Amino acid sequence: MLYQIYETQRSIMEPFAELAQAASKLYSNPLNPLAQVPMAQRMSAGYALMHRLGKDYVKPEFGIRTVSVKGVDVAIYERVEIDKPFCELRRFKRFSDDPDTLTTLKKQPVVLIVAPLSGHYATLLRDTVRTMLQDHKVYITDWKNARLVPMEEGEFHLDDYVNYVQEFIRHLQAQYGNCHVMSVCQPTVPVLAAVSLMASRGEKSPLSMTMMGGPIDARKSPTAVNNLAVQKSHEWFENNVIYRVPPNFPGAGRRVYPGFLQHTGFVAMNPDRHATSHYDYFKDLIKGDDASAEAHRKFYDEYNAVLDMDADYYLETINTVFQEFKLVHGTWDVKGVDGRIERVKPQDIKNTALLTVEGELDDISGSGQTQAAHDLCTGIAQNQRQHLEVEGAGHYGIFSGRRWRERVYPQVVQFILSHQPAQASKAAAPATSKPTAAKKAATKSKSVVTKKASGVKAPARKGVTAKAKPAVKTQWVSKKSA
Image (tube, rainbow, N blue to C red; front, top):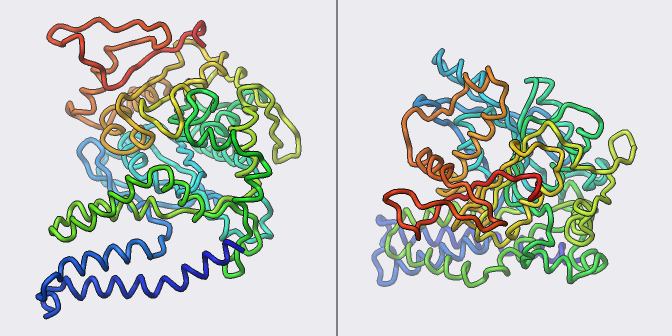
């Protein structure tokens, strides 16, 4: 009933939101006499804000048209390679008419980016994809809005998520011979499960796993997200956040965790920040600061676009990851597509290198939650495991924005290249031809190797005061510490 009430309210508000947009343009058009009346700018800004607050936000586009590879602009074409009921495997194919660039593109590593299915669309990783395309062939899991999936497609469980990831990995291995996997936030858990199961069966596993800001062990440094999951019972979640999709959608009748409830939860975590941001947008419009206003619109076009999650997947994730901690306790059993039940054993992974990345100020996945993967993957050799902590970075900063591009990405690209087959790795050197701020940051961070647990500090370099801190803490994880 709540879902239906929300949809009714949204349908009623939509025409008013469009009228507000029209009124905003009316008062801001210099050719219109109304734009010359006193307070016209304020009225235009007020109507623009009303439009933003009342409009319906649809799934954004990735919108990546070109990227630069060694100084050459390369055209990007999106296409869906595998279309599953709840997910599309999307490829960003690169085209160039420059022979040298084509040779470079063909020999670069293949990376599967597993996007989170936790409220927002995969386009949240737009900056991640755009940056990775400079030095990699990139694929991404583009999850579908559950309210658009007809009931005849069946339910979607956490086990299905794991099976999807395995199928996508096998697809890339069949096409290219090998691949690397990157998971951001929520998918770190199912990706680790997928690779573990493949390793336990003796299947060919990815060359490397890069895990960024995910709840591998949600007991460590619990955040507000973790506390909510622990404080509320399974029954509470089922009774309070699960609703059926209204009749006006293809997935009518499907039990889901609605996107609008998730969005409410996102905003409730930092209401003051969002209120200030909207007020700043209003002031920017009055001042005529178009650049700041456009930045606000771009951010909230993405932030406010949310999707519904299938109820079974959501509830099982809460139970498995945040309540019973089945992965770290070694009690997680996954049902395969053939119906067999298999135990997830991360210790069986031996031929896949592991890189974990955390943000110092992450308020979604607390400190140590992602690094805990090293405690589980004891079969991976010491020199094949690495951990990065990005100082001053929050959750989004480790995969999007300046810190991602300048501090994290240089480490990621070097880690992936170091675990490519020797011949391919030599041919596919990083795309940037001359020293950049990103490379300098990478070089600086590599010179500072610390062990957080032991408290050992890197010696101060000549010309650098003892108070200076590295932007990225890099540590090779030993078996003893794991």
